[in-house]
Each structure stands twice: as structure tokens, then as C-alpha cells.
Length: 72
Image: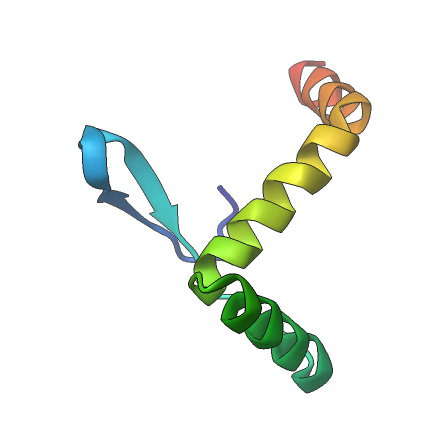
């Protein structure tokens, strides 16, 4: 966790630790996310988490490189 971003660990359902983060979006991106959430009948947070998980899955090779660089 970076020093610039203040994050709080929170106990989520199932006793799993979650991290809460505050994120700002350009208005057009926020409106698109809201629209997707309404269409799917889910929360805005769910859409953001789902998109984040998919992005990470698609970029795992970059994540591995970043972790290795931190170990050096």
C-alpha cells in the first residue's frame, strides 16, 4: 500500500479482509459505470471490482514482472 493513498482494511462477508479505496472517475466514465450497473442490476462497486479482476487476469505477466522488480 502506498503512503499517498489512505486505505482501511475492513472485514467483509465470510471473514475475508477487504481494502476500501476512494477512486475518482471522469464524469463520462462514471456515467458509463452507473449505466452498466443499472443494466446488470448490481452495485457500482461490483462493476468496478469485476472490471478490475478482469484487467488483472489479462495482465498477469505485468503483475509478475512488477513483483520481481520489488524483490530485487
